[in-house]
Length: 174
Image (cartoon, rainbow, N blue to C red; front, side, top):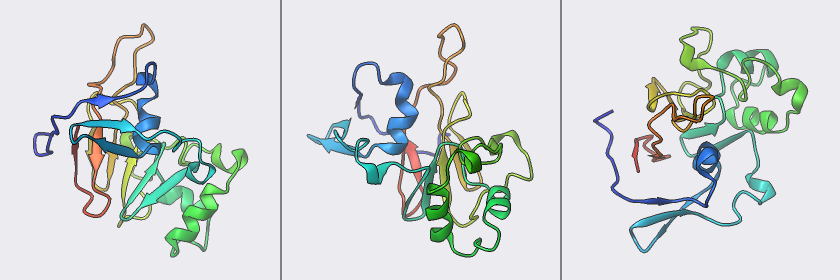
């Protein structure tokens, strides 16, 4: 969207990491180096405390597919009022709980399904999972998987990275 600021800053990723860009953009912290270049900080992904299904930074949730109200109501009935408890519980879930079509690994709220209201409604969510040609913004959700490819290897999306201010929830392009 033209209203979002574009940073004219090159992005440096390790060789072969292009296909893993969604993982790097969500899980890795970005470090500013010499004021012009951004690089993924070494060691961030290898720290056990950084491995989680959902990460919260201030007013933003980062996950693979998004945390939906439907999933929370079914899996965590009675906990809906305590967001931090919900996040801690979801991050402790195993395959059995997460192998649901509306889980933070598989939800597709981009499909316009009215049942897929994001939880909680007062937090902004940044997700990947669903390939999009360009970053898709919907209410309190942005979908950033613009690095997917067709089966023949051709790019599907515009291959753009976004930055998100976790306090104001403003976002833009690198």
